[in-house]
Amino acid sequence: MKQQIKGIIFDLDGVICFTDIYHYNAWKEMADGEGIEFDLKINDRLKGVSRAESLEIILEKASREYTPQEKADLMELKNHIYREQLKTMTPADLSEEVRNTLDALRAKGLKLAIGSSSKNAKFILERIGLIDFFDAISDGTNIQRSKPDPQVFLMAAQMLQLNPEECLVVEDAEAGIDAAEAGHFHRAGIGSARDYAKTEYRLDSFQDLLNIPLES
Ligand code: BG6
Ligand code: MG
Image 1: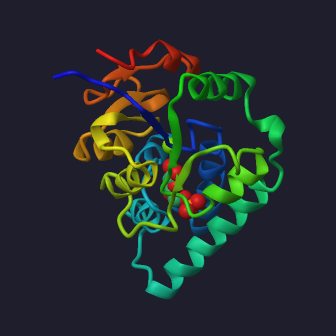
Image 2: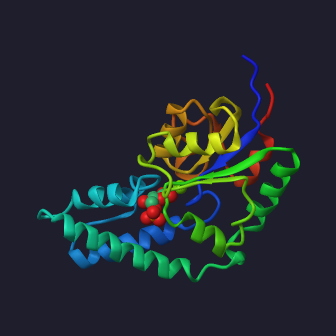
């Protein structure tokens, strides 16, 4: 079947900018405070999944049960620590490579969107000066189910008025690649998702996006 890619849907954390390390730092501080073991390996499982689901994964290592109120408090604490770090971000935190690649993709006539599970996505885009750049923003505020459910990407495609088969999803999380596959999107993986079995295009760097054939 003839393939034509008309739009690209980008994950945000770990793809457009390196906020994934801030997520890790904030969860680590919370987990240390509770005496719960937490490391980079466990952190990999949090990529792409919602705040509430991330907490459940961390609590698998806890030695006691947590009440719904305690869980809400821990999520608020984590989000507070996380947002304090986000506040330090400026447009200088957007790499030149990402900025130039986004501009080059747009110049090819592609529609560009964000597909992120984060409720902080717009805040981050404001901080790095990209809030007005994308044609659509689908994020944690407009979905009921986070990745690996395809909802966030399906909403983005709908906003772009494209079919999933016409869109390429760019992800650093296995849960995100799973979501893209479930929604019948094309899939490019970077970072942790580069070598994942379900990844279609393996990116060594963001600018490798420019080498993906739009028609084949
Ligand atoms: C995703 C991150 O982008 O957003 C996850 O990869 C995170 O690790 C999720 O849990 C939700 O983020 P937030 O900002 O709403 O807590
Ligand atoms: Mg990510």
